[in-house]
Length: 188
Image (cartoon, rainbow, N blue to C red; front, side):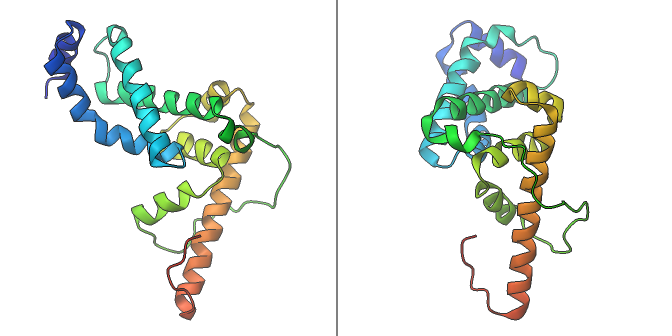
């Protein structure tokens, strides 16, 4: 697919090109939106708002870099704005600098599938989930995350470390329960 031609056609208000652009990216971007929200309905809202922003700001895409990455960045920013603006996420997005336990830099000795890991990430508290996704999945630096979320870099680092520690704990717990035979595929 020639994204540059598609962008030019969309800028000329070609409805078929707009439908094609949406159809090409909607599924993938729904996954991005769902990673940041706690329900499919919220993810659909973010997706819709995100595509409105994509079409509204299409003139700003200069053809430098991959078009899909440009769309993805808009979706991530839209998801973060959505989380900040919804009262049900407000408390969960508060970032507390209290110390927890020390975090190990060691990786867990357990193999886990991508779908299982994605579900575990979705079970993190929204603040942890947001920072984990931005750092580990999207590739933002802690400085960038701090700027986007309005927190300091250290808070981003500590929230990421806590999210990672929770995930490692859940993964290790599942491994132990699976080994002993007492684990019967329960939600974590």
